[in-house]
Length: 193
Image 1 (cartoon, one colour):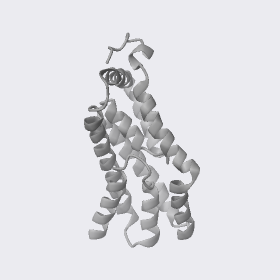
Image 2 (cartoon, rainbow, N blue to C red):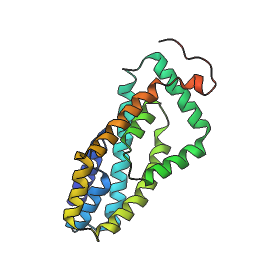
Image 3 (cartoon, rainbow, N blue to C red):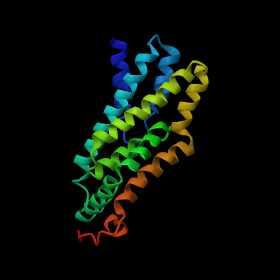
Image 4 (spheres, rainbow, N blue to C red):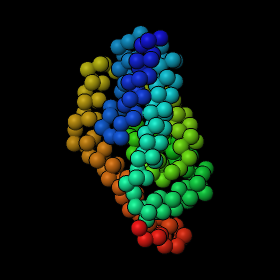
């Protein structure tokens, strides 16, 4: 039981990071390859830990981010939230597809937090997608040699494309806050701030 709690704590902690954390699938694969933990327990624990960490990251960004955003930026994000909430089915489908992909999700939760979106449905869709993808990665891990997995993790954190992807996604969050969503979505001009 202690090993599962340690695993939960590691995955939870990694998913609190806004960028540059190792992908959770790699942690699951390492545990699958090198440990005695049962994959049918490891996957849901990993998905729950990842979803909990991302939820807390989104909530922290919501709370802390509002302190640093101008009134105009906050209004722009409110317009984006309103548009996404009107298209809830498309939004959840897109999130579900994103959750299945190996793309970093920290910035998505930070953007959702800044936009003050309802995070629980967002997190539930993330959990479901990650449950599926972690199952695939866990089952696949049995066929991967540990040295090649270590290289994959190391390359995702140190190669220029891995670093560039993380930096680009952080820049995307900044760009998201600069868009006049109310004007782009036909809601009039944003207040000056």
